[in-house]
Length: 424
Image (cartoon, rainbow, N blue to C red; front, side):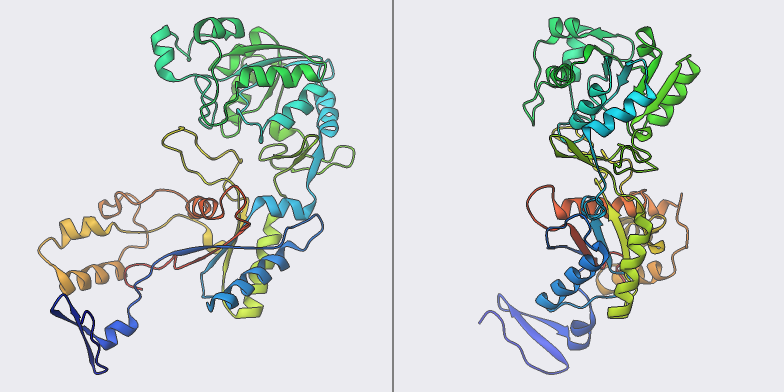
């Protein structure tokens, strides 16, 4: 027979005629599963719902249904989208337009470095155009800030174009490259953004450049729409003599005509809700994660780490798209998620420190090394190859991939074993 078991102080296991002994005590105590990430289904969340209560009840119901138990330092994460939805943090195109008119009263200004996205930027652009008379739209090329390509780099090389120096008009771009559609969405974003602006009765001129200061050849009033480089763009524009400089983070940073708002990020991190509304990035998330953690402690006795997560910080190797279109991966998290991992590289230990050991002796030596490792391994050779990123960015990426962008219906992610290591 393939397997044969005896209940004794050892378990003889026969596999292909060979007997392998696993001591019962080790077999029963050793954990063989590491980190587990589970998407948790939740009700469809509406404005006014108690998001903290829903998160806790959903995780506990999932645990009961699967016969699972929560543990200390489990991580429960909830996507920013449902937090903002529960808060009712929305704004209309007209409210965006009103804020634009307030900040650019003469109606003519540059809009520079937006990402190429129907979900992320199209409704924002509609509101910006509705509040303007003329826009000079300056797109970055060969791709936007998060990797969506207007043109591939090889085509630029073939045409002798240097995106760091050459400014292209829309006409010149067409002469060189024709109609170029996004490989995933099939959208020609130059035409798409032109049409969105003109539909609002706004005049538009489109140019392509890599230096934010080139917009000043056309206008001294600028709305910079980049996400992670916005502080630098604002600094360079002001130093170069721009008269008025705002970013997407300055639009709807306070309520406008009763709108939602985000004091820290404004329109950054917003998503299309309807053809006339956007859902803003959630606000006051610190209070949300603390309420969730306290409720888990009360109901389970476990100290659970909690975070709100948005886009994961990873890059698609085929489309070259860097996923992080939100201003941060996590706008709020409990204190135990602060900092970076402090990990050693097992293969480095096996190939260097303990290269002459094998089997149980090797396992014991590595386990002892991990237990005695330094509290700060930054710069140490034994940590080379471990991921030098913040815990919230790593866990947020795991959550984003687990929950998925579509119809999985799992806006909550429950992670177990993330803080374990080879010894536990």
